[in-house]
Length: 506
Image 1 (tube, rainbow, N blue to C red):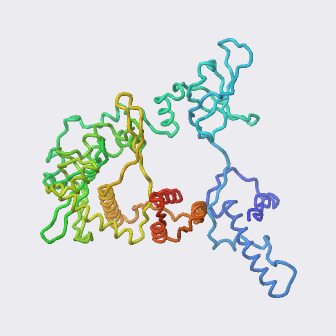
Image 2 (cartoon, helix red, strand yellow):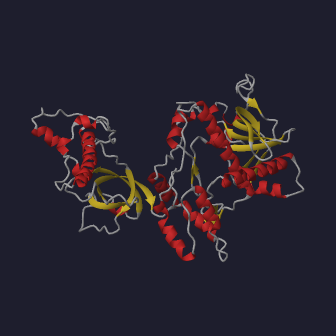
Image 3 (tube, helix red, strand yellow):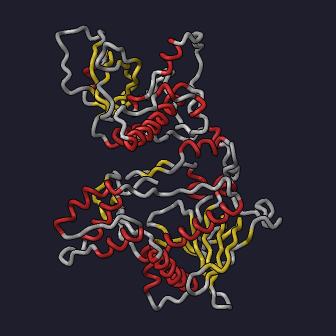
């Protein structure tokens, strides 16, 4: 109860303490004013309730016999206090530049000299930001444009913050302008890579070739796996191929299965300009008509892309699996591979479904699919939750690159095949990291969603006689499996999409 927290500062002043010297209030420090006050309040409440119970039993009507003044610092010593702190001042406002447009209700009052600055209101694209007042001589020219503004101050007596015009971005509605607004508002770094970053690229450029001596195969620190029938399976048009697979039957009836991930660390060394830029960008951003790369194109779509028919450096996770997809053993290697085929999901599916195709790559895909189905069944039986988050693809006009149509991405067996082995690789690598570095291993988890997250969905399902059981992943998965409407084949998929929105962020 916040109201029961005593004013410790006032008590100390009244007791004739020396004037306090300015100092930092350390969050969680038992000697801090706030920390001790919170402890005092909690202990007071606990002892008061105990005393009330005792008095009630004794038939007393004098009320609690323990008061706040009875609680001493010594009585708090063994109690673990909450981590607390308080704001003592604002050093700097974390303002940034905002994409905005002139308030459409703006109208210049009276005739002004063209050189006279005008005070106008601008509305940020981010609707959480209040109207910003700026002074500019270009008010008429900026009407109908997207502009960039910065906040300078927010005086106490003003309803709106004051700022200044930075630059014009272009006409509202223009594709290039709106794309730039999108990138700026989401703080996506999209400037070209600097000279310092490009200096970290291999001097051979696109002519880089694998060298057994330089790339440590001769020294035994990188394994040569170029003899294996490795292939990649990706969406159509994919140029940054970062994973590939293989499966080989073994004489004992088991299978050797490998997942190979592009070895970017061979080209991006720690603390270099390129490493820092990649950390700043953190991911490749995909837009409808282009992408913003995390690494220079030479690496992302060439030297670190596991394309077919070229030698590429990789990091490989290789299992021996029995016929029921149980792991017999697993090893990890830096490697060099030579992919035999770069397939799309559809091409891999067609190979798998065509009984006339009996080449080694197709046989490998069939073996991978057989094992993936068993891995998936085991996961689902253990309570894995299958939700739905459909992806769409935009069809672009060849000349202008304008989107002309949108279509749902069709999921095939080969999508699930790749997904299962990427999951298995993540699990195996995570286990290895935990075994070797238990104090440094990070777990990325999805917290259990609170039951109220499902309230609206449960209410909508009630007229249909459907109820979701949200006590555990397994219970939710089973209730989703039962939630079927014979009259609407898409209903279950729609329900899984809506259930995804009830989940917590990882």
